[in-house]
Image 1 (cartoon, one colour):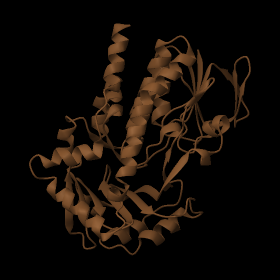
Image 2 (tube, one colour):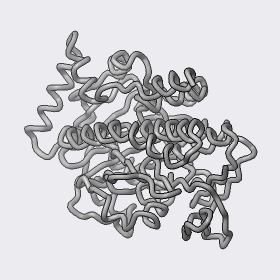
Image 3 (cartoon, rainbow, N blue to C red):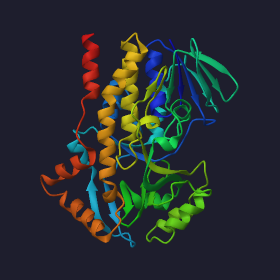
Length: 395
């Protein structure tokens, strides 16, 4: 069986690894001219953590992880006003939590990618034709035939546009823009220590954390009624955050230009179906949950694991795609609802909500209450990967 996977992010890489292991002929195409670096820090837990465990990735991911003691909210003078203890959060998750750069999660997958996978950088899918077999033309003017095309090409998916229609039909804008970048600064690196430090501010927020080689990673999110990405993201970011206090002016002055600056909308993708004939979507292409939900990477990896399992176990591709959707849809919809529900807590719009967040985090340190706060953040646990493993063992 031949498969073309568009997008070499977490979902695409995981699928390439798993389908290659299952004996598929895999071609992986990626729009970027080379492997992506940098990005932003994520808290990795949930079904994707279970999928990484099933794939044997956890030892390597723990090596690549960055230890964080707590998320600390500070005022304009850098004084702590609230704190979320990561050790308590990990305890709620049974220790199944790690913090890592998204690019490091991808690195772990690149390291196990089979040499038989045909990887093509600097190109994407131009057209898809469903003839006697699936015919795909790429932007490098090559033409490929395949049994299946998988769109793992993110929230602005080209495969989704070609197969299902314009992005506007599926994108749900959540009223915010986000950005991320890294820079090297030994003094700021030492000042941050093992804390994820965030500004305690209205309608906008910047978070900073120290990573390897004296680098500082920056995450920013702000509310905006404008559902378009600015022509000059660097200047837009500087204009939005430059007047904040503490170390933020220094951090903003170090903001690079794209492509070293990641900038996008905070949004979700909502679709009734993720497959059509011999084309299927996975990860953010069909089920972006938004950074507010905190499980985008986890959902992407879990979905890739589930899709690969169904394709490997079922001889009929249509049946496999149907089962994949049926098992992943409830998880995605629940996680998207969490993201929408905590939007006002994540980026408060009023002083009242800002104070309420401080109080909730302060109370979270009391015995028993930390589990309530933690569960509100991570949602209910799913046994998707365990169930898949049990079914595979019984087949």
